[in-house]
Length: 150
Image 1 (cartoon, rainbow, N blue to C red):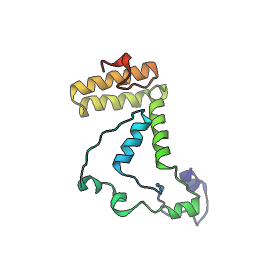
Image 2: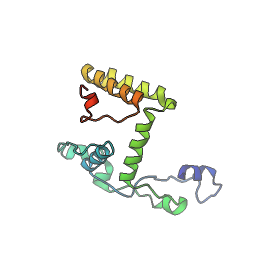
Image 3: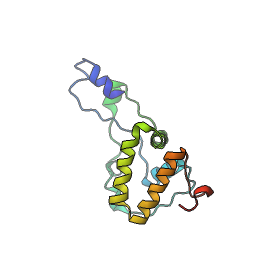
Image 4: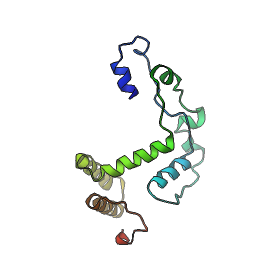
């Protein structure tokens, strides 16, 4: 919404400025992975300590969160809390798997992942899981007996 506000306002106070549209909170990678796992219905997410190297990939870890004061003051920007954003994002991606409007995009991503990223045996299993979700419109989990062969 803030981007639309900037584009549609003819206000010299708002135009010709850079805005940070970010969160006001930070979290650890472990927290983020736990929230993603929770959105997926997983009660336990395993992580390992990656040490200081990984933390430098995320500037907010070493420098604090991005300053969004200008966007808040001039545009009325209020970010969605991170945990809520994770849940909404998961729900969007989950629903997109069965939405015909996203068929091409899903096929492109699945093909790329199965050919370029995953080892063959994992790629084959991943494609099976995606096809089950797309045809049944259901979540799968390791505890789902119907699909225990996956």
